[in-house]
Image (cartoon, rainbow, N blue to C red; front, side, top):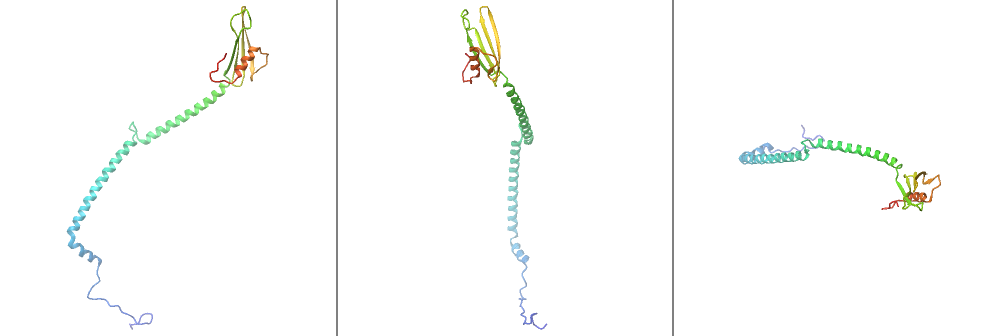
Length: 198
């Protein structure tokens, strides 16, 4: 070698202290641990005991929490929370089905009840002077659409006669007497709280 660096300039040689060998990190650690091995072992033993105690405490708490969770999620009959929830969901579905069936029945009843007698008008009167009291009457019986009939009863000493006249949409095709017309008017009048036929 000619003492030149690869670039052509003079080469600088680094001097190494040959009296002092390079220091190994493991040797440094060994030199620290060896004189203090008793204290380090004692410290590690104490740490192990602390960790074992902490592990026992965590294990006990975990067991206690597991038991509390099991008691909270256990059904009154001893089943699991999942079984209880499934039973409740089945019950809710059954109730929903019942509500749907009741809604269908209510719709049917609402349709049918429109044809039922809902409006009543009654007039009592005395058409003859020779009979006492208002024993004759005219009663109008109407459904929600104003369809129905009027029944009239004429009471005399010689007997009682009963007549019926059809009503459609609140009107009669036949002529009505004054009392029958009043009974129809009362039946067709909007109901008020506490109103009763006269």
